[in-house]
Length: 611
Image 1 (cartoon, helix red, strand yellow):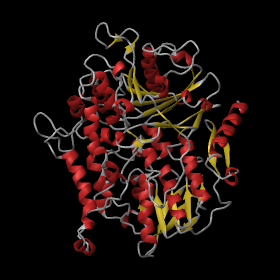
Image 2 (image 1 turned 60 degrees about the vertical axis):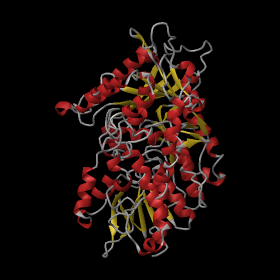
Image 3 (image 1 turned 60 degrees about the horizontal axis):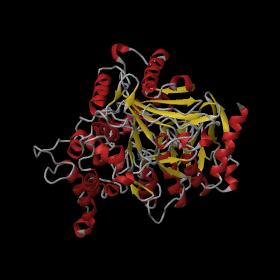
Image 4 (image 1 turned 90 degrees about the vertical axis):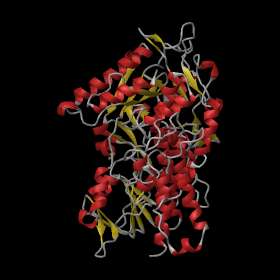
């Protein structure tokens, strides 16, 4: 056990040495926690100082990105994290000794998870560790024990593989009547996705007719461009874009993803596979109005020049957070774990003046950036009497429902699927190296699973995205063993009849998920040597995710752009002067992008220079 833990720490330290100065690596060490060895960071400073220029609440990836930008600009910055490990939900922790896993996802946000962290500006912060592109991008298994395949008679029983380099498909793997307009749909969608980075990186503030804007027509161009991109997606019914429909009308909150997929594809397995990107992390089905935008949100980025591509972080998602923290500390930022913030300190003028810790320590600062959710930031850390009543009401009304239960599994062998059995040498095949979709033969299955959850019952056939990060990064598990990440939905935060997510309920649901996997990959259950189950209440308790929502709030259009987290406050500034929101609850929303952290830092820097 100790040998495996030590070997893991050595491997990760070796990876970090490629992006961190050697003098900083002495601060990184494995610390034993309740579930085994975990990566932790002691902070670049020996002790916490009582005054900084800026304090960042929470060391999630957005908070770390904000700290790196602030410190690079010469603003003395401290990051305070309540947990023993940095990274928020983007961390790598062990399931069983020697097999680390990412509690929420081993995959970074597609494209923008890479591109936005390195957005081409003069103040670019180079932080990324190795990124391994997922090739193929996704695989859907269509052969189950006792159920046969969904292919037509005589078609080969093989998985559906999606390759971004093949226009979103691999023709040789498509069933008959597969893609109707595959390459054309990619080209048409690119009209909108090309403009989406413009909507992601700049901060979006409410339109106000300032004196400078009255004098300069050019000042109007950028916000008008933003609006035009949104109008194309939400309102315009004509043409062959994703908003068009046979009836010539659109849903008021944007089209549902089923409407878009029906326009371009005939194959049900293909449509269901693509639909998972529209509902992932959302209490929504492919038929929910506005889910079409979420589909777009997941494919609008790029990785190594390939639009919509996904990649795997060498060393797990924790390595990404560690690399960002390393970049911040290399510039002089002070980062501390196990420093829980109790509340934000306010001056007599109502301005944020620092934070108070749970141990009574007060840290003064001119700027306070919160990487916590809007609910924690404004309903727990900030005095309610200092906030506008309508703002507080809006924060309380944010939809934070979560369908996600994350299960991390350690297995002693590589899963072998009926649709694509393992090779004799036991080496990973292409479909092992991407996101494997189960219970995704058609969109009706996804809608049925969603409907069950809306009535308070975990899905009988949950949507499962199965990833095997150790298939691409063998160092994540002992030889012959593997780490399996199960991103499952739908599971309601509140169960029917007042039942709680106790140990019995959690294990019953995990057993149901394992039974489903067993149908596709016989022998899977016998290979399990350890598992970690994280239901929505667990995600809220451990990571501070409101309702267990991985995005800090729904990603529907009524909770995005100008309305995130509330109308008139989408520009990262809060009703409290000097207090900024820099997490996923701010524009542009959830995902491992770093965009919110970067944007908030830029806004805070602008204000800091005028203090």
